[in-house]
Image (cartoon, rainbow, N blue to C red; front, side, top):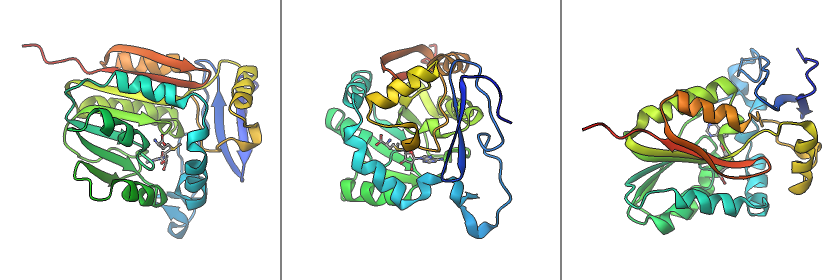
Amino acid sequence: MEGNDPREKKHRLCGMSAIYAGGNNYKLDARALGASNGRTEANEFMGMPREEKLWSSPEHARKYLARADALPRRTEGEATLLEFVPAGVTRVLDLGTGAGRLIGLMETVRPRAEFVGLDFSPTMFEAFDKRFVGDPRVSRVAHDFAKKLPAMGWFDCVISSFAIHHLAHERKRSLYAEIFELLAPGGIFYNLEHVSSPTEALHDEFLQAIGMSREDEDAENILLDLDTQLKWLRELGFKAVDCHWKWRELALFGGMKPAKES
Ligand SMILES: C[S@@+](CC[C@H](N)C(=O)[O-])C[C@H]1O[C@@H](n2cnc3c(N)ncnc32)[C@H](O)[C@@H]1O
């Protein structure tokens, strides 16, 4: 049901719905919660209705890759993320890795680390494989992170850029809990993310600033405000939780799993 809350905006593009909600009073509908619409298996992609998963479409993935460099200010957020990665990290997981953009950046500053990129898009993995062919430090896991993460061993660093906002809010929180579990004590998590604006006007200004309109928006964006996500990370046990960089709806935030007490 669409409410009267002016902060809530339902986008209807390509016959799909997504939720834009500003402030902390986000609302969900069945689709934002990931409910099945009962379509047949033939129409499914990794257990989800295919037409509801834009990121399973090669065209959507290629369109993103073609414009990825053009997102204003993203390099500032990425550079800030790199600043927060300790020199001694040994094993890094990139959630929603796409073509491995973040891993490529991290490799330059942490050349001795091992990297695992997780995604569910075959098209993204084609680009990922081309980029890292023959690189023994880099591997990948095909998985839909709307579902529980598979066993992948421990990591001392989990990173993600512009991917987790595609999940329903409940799953964002439970994914953060799973990240906490797979981090070694003292491990860090940083998410360079698209967060919601507190008002519709600020959302429109953001879109204008990145050269987009409401019509161009990704129908699978389920934006959530930064404060809620910082609060969740603290509740889940992360320490030193903070937002280290923000420009309009782009934010770098995260924290550390406490080191074991000796
Ligand atoms: C906007 S792209 C960002 C890619 C990369 N992190 C970057 O910064 O260039 C979002 C990525 O998240 C992936 N993704 C979206 N939903 C996902 C899901 N449920 N499970 C796994 N990957 C997902 C997409 O396939 C895509 O590669």
